[in-house]
Amino acid sequence: MNDFSELEAELKAMRPAAPSATLLARVERELAERATATQTAGVLPRRRESRVNWFGLGLGLAAAAAFLLLARMKVDQPVQTHPPVIAAASAAPQSMDVVPRTLVPDGVTRVVYNTSDEGLVYPESSAEPVRRVRSRSRETLQWKDPGTGASLRVSYPTEEVEFIPISGQ
Image (tube, rainbow, N blue to C red):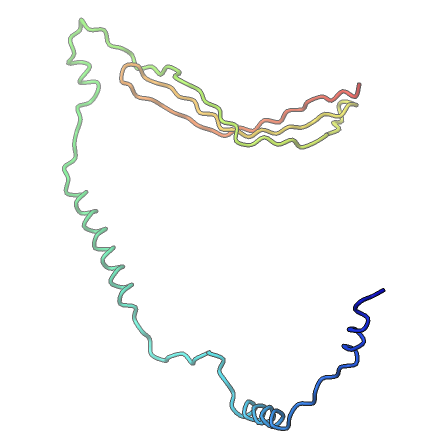
């Protein structure tokens, strides 16, 4: 039934040919030469003299000089003084109503960036299992001063853990 049985029998009968005498002589000669001459495998000895990286040194000096020039330019600028707010309010005519500075809530945003279902939990206080769901978010509150237009924004991370009851009925 098997078509390859004849081919398999022929392959089993085959044996490799003996190597020629010249091949054996060349292999012996190469092995003898390799044993006497040790190769470095590309590893070269280190130089004893220290070399300076002039490009890196020049680049570092140029960056330091630019930093010093920019820092010096900032120091040379005159300091601008603004009149105090109290003096400006006292110089205003008395007939105008002065708006007190108050912050008014302007907006709230909540971004949920991770919600994970942590599976069933068996709390000690109840006999029924509950599913624990953890949500991580960032809340941002913003207030605005209507008189000056100034705004204040506060952002903080929050984490909520919810226990959702599971009924088996």
